[in-house]
Length: 77
Image 1 (cartoon, rainbow, N blue to C red):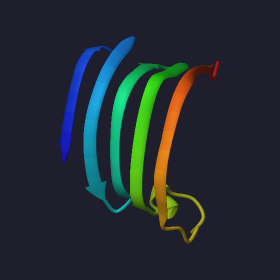
Image 2: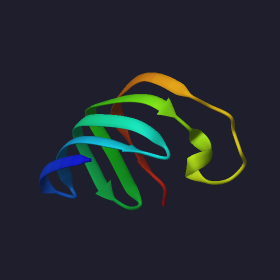
Image 3: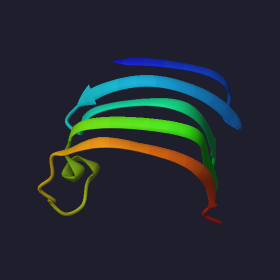
Image 4: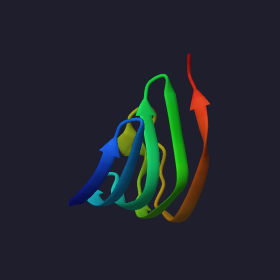
């Protein structure tokens, strides 16, 4: 596991590599983590062996591999 971050929750630059029951996930980019406001700016996530059932809920048989690039925001309030 590796996690590097710089900034504050209102604009946090992240670089991470995680491995576990969920699968292997690498992410690099900028995020906003101020609930109910969530955002990403040029966030690139690469994943392999992604097993969605590890997130909880119903068992969903998956083994996803790929990448996702995200720029945008959502306010859940």
